[in-house]
Image 1 (cartoon, rainbow, N blue to C red):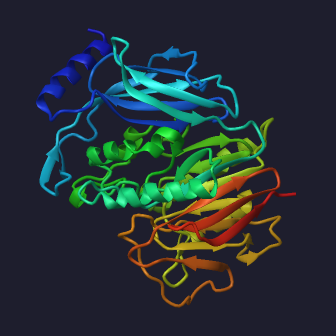
Image 2: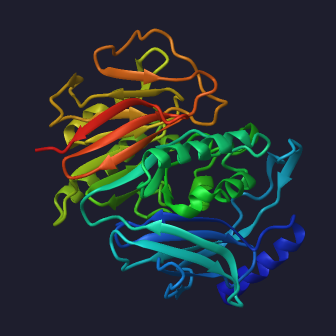
Image 3: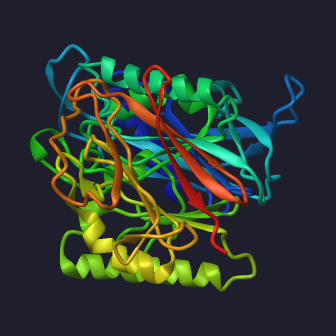
Length: 426
């Protein structure tokens, strides 16, 4: 029996056994290896035969092109996981579905596209979503956000984060996509949390991408920890190193090379060595290519500094490697307190034309932030810290051109709190 037929039979059986689902859910656009011409669309199907149509945005006159999934398999990653219902009841989620992805190729750079998901009969089951491809070079911008811990019994968390995306949109109506730095789910093993998150209109407007946070990597009570929760909720480029394919990855967005890491399997010395060797390889090969990036941006979830007091955290691990490779910008989250530096090389500030700028995002769920103490460490290199305490909501606008990257920290009311410049290297 063909594999596709087996998948269809299995999913049809499982759908009868479980609670009612939408035929298709958790639809999201992630980048391909080169986001100027490649975008990955993924979704979870509870019926066989789903596919997508996409087109250049034409205000109702779209010339739709049909694309079958280039990837599909039965996903049991979230099955039989202890969780909570939206009403706070103890539940066990019985979830299996066909994980589908369409890897779109040969797109036009800097172009607005729309897409939709259809069932086997050609009926549209997910209405129009959108994304914009990256420019081959030149200006672009994005929203940078993290740590909103989607948890259906506390819907205010997700609302605060989506409102914050709206605040960034008001500040910069031209944002092209959204980058998250992890902990977007309270328990990554709870499929219903991902479903609720991907229902939000902001996910239908933009390409999103991000990385695996410690909360995204866990279930309730730590019954299970797995990077597969992040992997199977998305479809990022499959160019990570051994054991991290679909979780660690790199992609080009315009003149910038982005590298996403997985802290949860980087704790041991051997794991860190494997990750750092991969970063070296990716950066070295990109710089030696016929189209070297203007900027190199490395993203991980764990903070560079414990901004409660300023104490060194992942900065101590990575700064020698970033110095060696000439990384321009290092982004992180997790600490729930914003912190930023100017460009640093060998532990000292530079004129900005060498060294790495370090920035970590605040939390934005209005519920799980933390307070600061007087700074006791790294006073000479941490230029700004910010938190609202337990109820923190903030995110960043990032604008990029051929001269510099400018990151602007905004609070929930759109007030500008900090501005960071990353200069293009000479």
